[in-house]
Image (cartoon, rainbow, N blue to C red; front, side, top):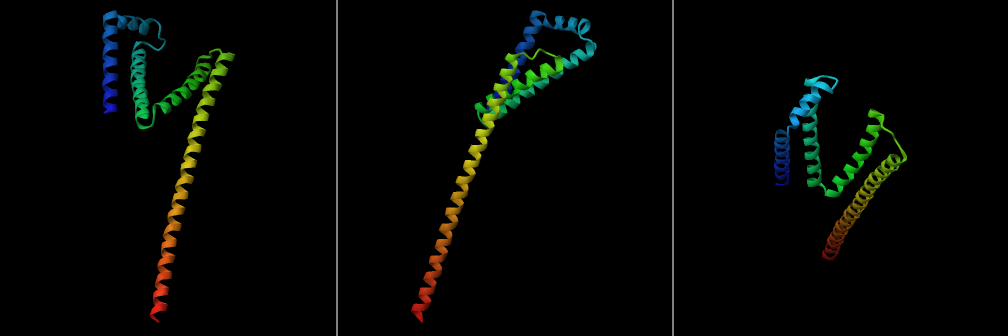
Length: 161
């Protein structure tokens, strides 16, 4: 049900944004930009725009799915990790300035993501140990029952003899 709701919301947002661009004349501006500004030509411009639209739709669907299957905290943590990747991508691809503010924010994003992963690792390790203790306790209980049964069988045999 949640995924269907997400699809409806994304579809509604896409339709409303498209209607807004039609009413405001945004598509004619994009057409001018494709002809006059984009170096690879108008066809490549529209392919790039459509690829970005589809890619972002999949990104949002993936985020919604991750929140549905895990928690909103996991979605937030993954978005934080993506922020660091975006900053580094801008510096590498567009030769953006990598000032001290971006260094600190990137390090904080990486630190937060790493802390979350370490916390999840420790939680899973703890759960595995508890499961192992339960299995060991159950095995001891079964073995004790078997020992008692064998002892009763031996007593019965000795009493009969």
